[in-house]
Length: 193
Image (cartoon, rainbow, N blue to C red; front, top):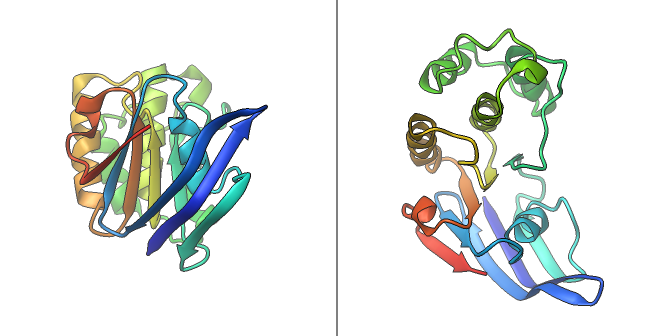
């Protein structure tokens, strides 16, 4: 799997947020996107995931339509579904078999075993964040995008997420944005925006 961008630009009003950005990444890469608040990290994630289109430049993935999953403050779960219902929905959406063994393994690793039948609107923000992270790995996507994934997580949740990312690197391209450089310590490339 390959993801490339050639001279992409994005403006809001007349202000450039991303200017002439180019890259070429593939499966196994763990790319960090570092910058202060408002520097364009989320915009770059949205562009590379093709949630939004660039004003100019090109973004290409090979194959053309790889599986992508985004964990971000702006990606929400359905308030009236529980974690298990979300997992079953992800399996249908990504046209994969619901992997019960992986589901229960991720529940255990992320300490979500007591929450899988509770609806999302009754969960704490940290538990919702762990559920989003769990669903990303359950999707078994070719590209995983994480925008500030450690928000609302305790130390155990952060450690587990890092370990899950290590394991996923063999089959996925991973891009992670953070305003904390320490969060990106394991990345093989860090982009400073």
